[in-house]
Length: 244
Image 1 (cartoon, one colour):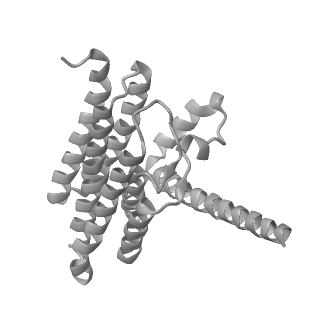
Image 2 (cartoon, rainbow, N blue to C red; image 1 turned 90 degrees about the vertical axis):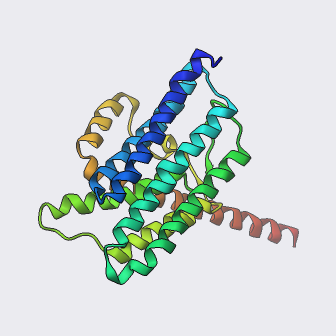
Image 3 (cartoon, rainbow, N blue to C red; image 1 turned 180 degrees about the vertical axis):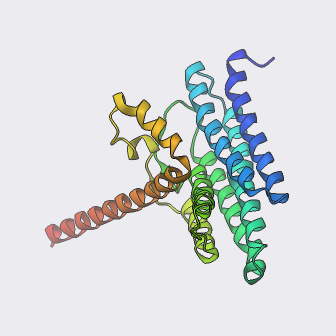
């Protein structure tokens, strides 16, 4: 018999998987707007299941594995199918559709496997080794979302080469060893008393803000990792000089 405290987080995780599945079916039918929003809603569920687990102290190895399998579908396979479906509509890039989409899916699944191997189920949130897969999915759908929004105003912002680059770079970052800070450390510039207003503003401008914050998260972490590596190098050089 499953304990009641596990029902809420596992139910939200199941909703995450369902939304990923719906995104896949929407991409197959070329309903790309629906596919994008289903992935975004899956991201919301992915954040809520962790909060529910912390609230009810419902952490378990089953929950961790279930969450990873759901993430593999919603943020690995679903964006991969979306990428494949869109690139397949461009005769110039149709031969690249499967390789590019598969590389993203492969790296996403590998990212989740690595996460499960090196972590245990707990209420502690550590920094990540490699970019978290939800942000990989966010980088893809946020670009598509802002492109579709700008198209309504007569601006053709979509570029297939840039879209492929975003997909490949996201895949590489997910399997890299670059340290990515947890989002609460990156977006700590907003005072807690204004957080409610900030969230409302983000949601009201989501078609634009998702793109801005997704890539801000990537750029911030790459920059801080560069500074960290530079500091380590300087320390090593200083220690070498002292030994000499």
